View 1 (spheres, helix red, strand yellow):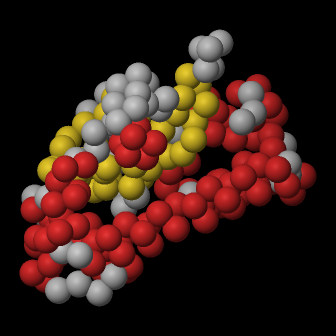
View 2 (tube, one colour; view 1 turned 90 degrees about the vertical axis):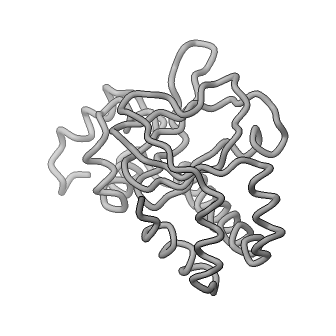
View 3 (cartoon, one colour; view 1 turned 90 degrees about the horizontal axis):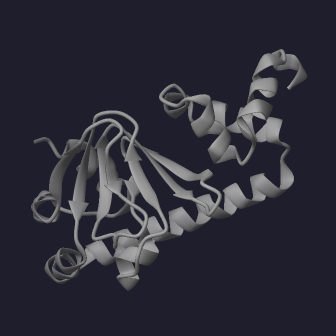
Length: 194
């Protein structure tokens, strides 16, 4: 099992030795998830934080009417979890589904605490990752409030072309907060009119 992508991701945020990287990797358990299988189901307690080694996941909720609302997609090199459930040991309001055969590196809460003790720089790493996640959420909220549905769709397609290629229109419309029918109308118009 190669940890090269994981190590590269860590090196982008903190300065670590090869020995520290190996120690970090030892705390993460490689897990394979087949296409359409769930890594987390709404109502379960999230017992992991995960790094996507290969594949793509969809993180979504199902509301009282049975509608799916996609919060985000996690592709190769991204992190996924339900932070509230993980930190507070509360039932998750999220579902995490593999959109294709995928591999993730998972760490549990106890292992994470031990890792902090063994390799203290990891606390800095997770702080930086948390800050990046907050920035991404803030940008998405601003886009949702300031851009039209057409503009949000174009931004998504231009920013994440490799993810878009893995998704169907229902998953994209769920992420954008629009109906599948409205997305179809957007896609039918020539690019110049969008």
